[in-house]
Every structure is written in C-alpha cells, then in structure tokens.
Image (tube, rainbow, N blue to C red; front, side):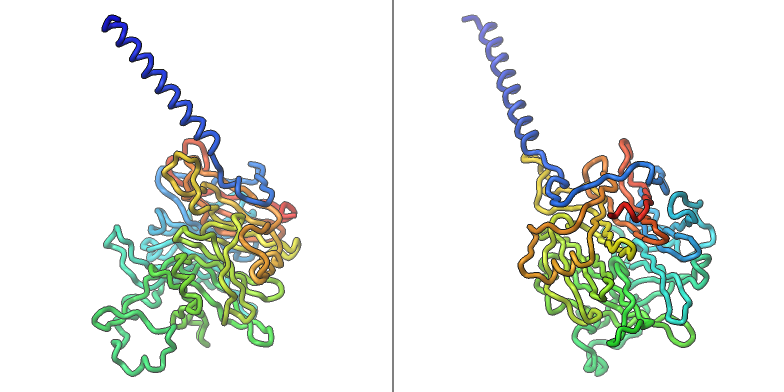
Amino acid sequence: MSRKRKTVIATIALLTATVVAGLALLSVYLFTKKDALDYVSIPTETLDETYYTVIDKTDYYLGHPDLVYTGENKLLIAYPLGHGKGEIVMRESTDKGISWSAPLDNLPASFAYSQETPTLYRLDFNDGTEKILLVSGCPSWAEDDEYVANGFNYSLSSDGGRTFGEFENAYGIDWANAMPDRGDPIYETYPADEMPVFDSSGDVLPYDVIVAMSSLTKLKDENGNWLDVWMGTFHDYDFYNYVSFLTFDSEGKAHWSNPKRFLSSQRETESGINLCEIEIFRTPTDELVLLGRANARNSNSVISVSTNEGKTWSKLKELPYSLTGDRHKAEYDPVTNKVVVSFRLYLPEMKPNALSKINELGGYWVAWVGSPEDLTDYALNSEKNKNSVLGDKMLVLGKTNDGKSDCGYAGVIIADGTVTMASYGKFERGAKVPYLLGVSFPVEKLG
C-alpha cells in the first residue's frame, strides 16, 4: 500500500474517531443537561411581559435595588452604581411601579460614597407618624483598599422620602476608637454575645458589616402590643449573624443597640453553612419566620421560627429547592393570605450537565408563593424535610442570558392590591451588564 493511501486512510480514521467522540460528548451533554427549574417540585408560572418595566439600563453594572412604600401612593427605589459599593441612586413611582422618575437630584452628598447595597424601610410609629430609613453597610472589600470595615451608615427621612439626612455612622471606626481596650472592667458586665471584636493588641475593631439591615422587624411586647422598637440583622465575614435594636429618644434621635450574635446556640450550623443575608418577617399569628442563605454551598437555604419576638429560634432546617437561593425578601398579603418571597434561585452542588466544570444551577430571579402556615408548619414539623413539597407555586420573574446567578436581590412591596418587585440581572438577550427590571401585577395573580 502506498504511503499516500496510508495517509488518506489514517486521516479518514482520525476524522471518523473525532466525529464519533464529538457525537458521544454531544449525547452526554444533551442527555444530562439540567435546568434549576427541573428540581422545583411546585408549579412554575411566567408572568406576561406587559407586567414588566425597565427601570434603568446603561452600559455599566447596575444592581442590588430595594423598594419602600412611603404612603401617598408613592414608591421609592434605591440602588448603587456598581456591584454593591457605589453612589446611591433613588427614583420614585406614583403608579405602583409601572413607570419611574428620573434620578432624584436632592440626595445627601454622603450618598455618593455608599460602601454597600442600600436597604430601605418604612418605620410606622405608635403615635401615627412615620419615617423612611435607608441603611448601607460598610464592609471591607478585599480587592479595594479604599473600603475598610466601618460599621454601617444610615439615613432618615421624616417627610415621606422627599428629603433624607446625611449618613450617620454606627459601630464604625470612630466608635471603635472611643471604646476602652479589652482589659477595661466595663466588659465584665457585657453579655458574651455582645462583646465587641478585638484585635491582637486588645483594641476594639469596627464591625465589618455586610448587608445591613438585611431585615428590619418591628417588635411587640409580651402582651402583643406594638413597640417602637425594630430588630435589624446583618452578618460579617466570619458569618456571625447579628441583631441590633433600633429605638428613638424623646428628641427623635435614632439609637442602635450593641450588635448581638443571636444564633450562638446554633453556631455549628451557622458557621458550617456560612449562614448570611437573613430575612425575617412576621406572620399574621405573630410567629417570626427566618429565611437564610447558605453561602458555603454545601446546604440548601434554611428556615427557623421564633414565637417569642426573636429571643429564641427553632432549629435551623434545610428548605426544599423551591426556596433555596440567595437574598430572600418576603411580604405578606392579607387579602389572599399569601406570602411572596423573592430570591435568587441557586441550587448547590448541581452541575448544568455532566461535562460542565460549574457546580451550580441558577440563573433565575423567582418568587415563591404560599401561605404563612406552609412555612411555620414546615419549620416546626419534624416529619417534613427538604424533599417535601412546600408552597403553591413559583413565579419565574427573570432568567439571565448567561445562566449565571448574578441577579435576584430585590425589593418587594404589596400595597393597594398590587405586588411590585424590582431586581437586577442580564435578563435580555445580548445584555452585557446587569440592569434594573421591575414587575408590577395585581395580588389576584397570587391565587
């Protein structure tokens, strides 16, 4: 056989082997391809595009919005120009989120130097007055020496969000410098969970606050009467979760209590799963329900319940896939008796296909819909586990164009018969950076 013929035969054999191998790999890919929604055990529903509004879209990164209902039929949205850190932008809507104003131009100068994603809350006082609260954590950022641990900043509005005060700081550098060192007798009276963090020299360190306040819950006394006290949550890089109680003095000045590590009795679980970004909301029967992100990616998200205004919590328990992900934000609708929980769907230790090097499934902004009883019964019923069916349905609100999980932090408001939510992500084909997307629909859609 000639050398030329041998070369042709070898080439054909190589091409054939390549094609066969390629077809085999394609078959493996197609037959093992999985989507996060494949593992959700409740019905899924995609809303009609007429319910959506693009709130802001530019050629640079936008993300991590939050919403607040100020009354007077007005919504405010706040978000940073950047991934977490960056100048805060605010807009307003007077038509339940269908349209949004241009960026407000009367914001405090200090808002330009926000160190992390802002959170928004309306504080309803027992005397009928209200304030709007904006909080922005001040964590250190490993890749940026400009941002160092500095507690958290907060700003208040007493006129329905028309104007805000300049940032005030809590538990940051100035506070730490004013505190006595570790040897001072003052610490003999400190509860163990409220002891500050010290450096190797015994000096107090500022708190390294991440996602402050991830939740803010108004509390009641032992007789069920409302208090003008709000319990806020945040975490640090060691995945300690803290509460700090917000009160106001007779002159209307805000005071935040010493941060308290409130899950110490479950520290092994808390640290083992890197529990963070906790959401706490109140049921109509006054249970407090905790939903949390498991950032170690070795567990589903978790749930816990308190029946004594957050003094103690039930055992942290893994949730089904239908509530597993990041940055849960919950609102209750009294008309339909439904809870809406917006979050980033993220399933740990799941490959998109057998060939993938990625060990996650996500790419969706979703909202779980169910009753408060669904959640409390699941959390407290030992017979239910993460393989149980939990909830009525899942609303699929957005899908990223690259399948990645950079989306889902959202503001959620239910007011005047309408559900309004806003999030960020590369939801549109061809989008190269995340933008802000809003959705607004009648509460009847929850049924």
